[in-house]
Length: 263
Ligand SMILES: [Mg+2]
Image (cartoon, rainbow, N blue to C red; front, side, top):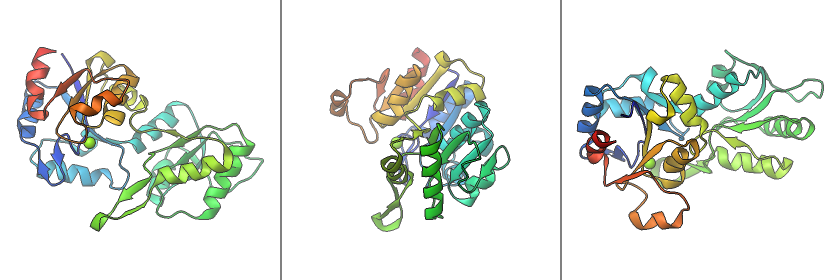
């Protein structure tokens, strides 16, 4: 019996503004059976309050502090677990404020300061000095390099996009020959961290999503069972393009309770 289900949102629970039929009933089933669930997003363009409000407005029972995580929380948790203390961070003030509770943030390049890690997040407050100093640290110290997400672009209104973290870390890679470890799906740390937070064995974790190269691959990478829903981005015929497979395939979240009864 699965005890924790990690959900993707768009394409899995809803499509834009529309709830996918059967979603409400699926969450009622999980609540009745006391199966925990988490809404996880790689998207750093909205904060978690945005998703909390959206899921609440659909009438799905959820708790802001318990059920919502993004790759930013995974990165922070992982850096803490590693015992890192001194970080150089590229990111918005909100990210830096969050980090400053647990880490000492170095703000300038100084060859005498020994860093523990460089962390890059989506920054709409980017200044060149930050990129420059981060690149100097990456070249002069054998320091690990992390990113909160690898998206190249972030959707805004009217079908337009603005540059996101993925392009920034690519720019840094070209300057330093060091690639960032991107902490969202498909990095297995997402699953390890969430399973640990809920104190649940990996064999009792199920990941559900519509995108094969993130939602399903994170399950494959962490060796946990995965369910692909065909209600979003990936269609049955797309599967043959990938060398890995989901453990289960269902048409939509509507079929999830029946699947959970069988596995
Ligand atoms: Mg999706």
